[in-house]
Length: 365
Image (cartoon, rainbow, N blue to C red; front, side):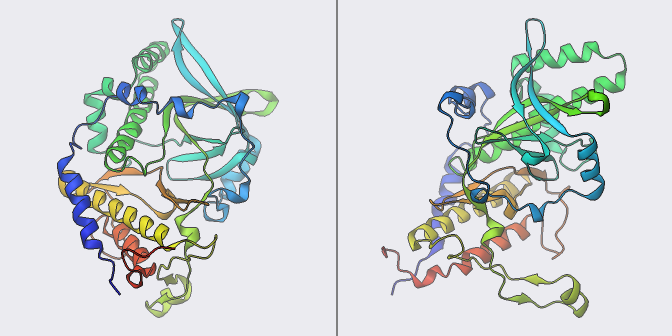
């Protein structure tokens, strides 16, 4: 039986990366004209029924709120998010998005995620300091060319808000927030250019989050936000089957066990072998894109299993909520591998667990 050879696929992917002009980041207007924002605007009149919570890529046990945070969220509960824009020569609130703690889906290092009533999520930026490794060379890039990554009305809003602030430190904080919004767009465009069909469409905006304080006084925070359409599926880590333990020292074996990653093809319905091949091929594309950025730009894609979704019932691979770090600023892996190689190794382990070599290239059915 003829065995599948992914070296051929890798050569094809490398040829694509070599021939396409990935250094050119498209302007925001170019993307806007292609409809990225328009396809994310909900049609309330034709709104579909909410996707059942059990069909969403959500595993709350993996991202629980800490005790202190839980108490804070109960005392000062979130109530809604507005998009903050500049209209009529003033700051203007638009696109009301109701949220509550019951709508909380999870959190990452940089965002809180809430479900909206119309099959979308809104992701609210968490406060970060300029010393965070996220703000490396790409942050300097947006600082030099801010007008490329922010819309004209966003630049106007930035200037308007800064003029209203009396303290220099307040103006600096506001300046930083808008540059962070621009940085999020740049990260998105970097990977969207490399993997256009795998990156889930995302709309970035400056938001204002509201909390209910005692005596019903609102607490308002201006922060970068983004939103996406919800898709039925599961995080990659939810497909993991723990069946082979990795040998470590006795202490780590007891308290910090590690397992070899194995893909469970039956956990959420039988996955056809042709679907497995397509998932594996797209994983190889992610690996080659990671290698391309590492070698050409010394950048690391911060991509973990919670950033990867396999849709159900289509079983298609999609990635979202990634960030791009400078190689020299990225936190080294515990395994001692070079930056980013731990992600690539984990992906390759997963592909190997598919056992695709037993299928012929022309197999079907």
